[in-house]
Image (cartoon, rainbow, N blue to C red; front, side, top):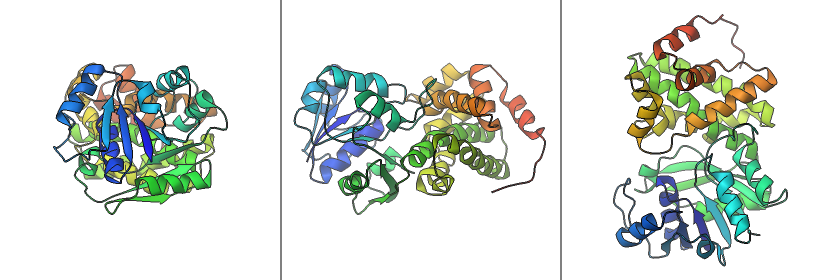
Length: 330
């Protein structure tokens, strides 16, 4: 197949390389002409381990060139950047082929999941699916074993996405709960920031286990506002992604939290990470959803207050510990 791939960050590069190694002709688009030329020349990503890239992977800064004749479109832009990029797609003539969302987030103010954003821009019946799950680009590019989830509004597309990406080292499990898969991928970034803060303050594994478990509970409670099946969050796109993001120094969101705990302000911590930190964006959206539906999201609130209200991380932990204890319901 011919695949137009939008977004040349580490995740986009790793998945585009995977698709090319699967025999597909992939054109990876970036909005920056100088960056496209760098990728053409070096044939490696500056922030990923060196690897052999199949010649079927090409690079361009022309959106029209990337989209021409494409059988599939895949995107890996930021959550905040998805709508503007898709609006550019419409401006150059639009698409009538399926699009696969691999970005993770919830749009601010609208509360839309990213597949919902895609349908709002491209058309309410446009074929949209997503790919999500516990997977660091740094490990995928090295072909280390990983397992993720494909989902779509249409069952056939869900299986087509599975077949498109599946390899011996990158296993793709289909899941019909598209909203649940997309929601888990967005929310885990917020909890990962909290875990990074906890570790950065010197709290132990007990604390992090509590944050992850109560974080998953918070995710499940809020998931019903988007029509998700709460049990979906027990799988790869929920608990699986939560584990890999909260436990690894490869996680941007986790490291952002650690930098905050070290005394850096949010701007400095983000610059230190040097890449997109989606939890910064999605914690606003999740807080808005919780307030709209009257659902308490204490961990999300704490992360929001640290980032946007200059709350000292130690004071945020104290506030969480002082909350009234209720019976645990699973």
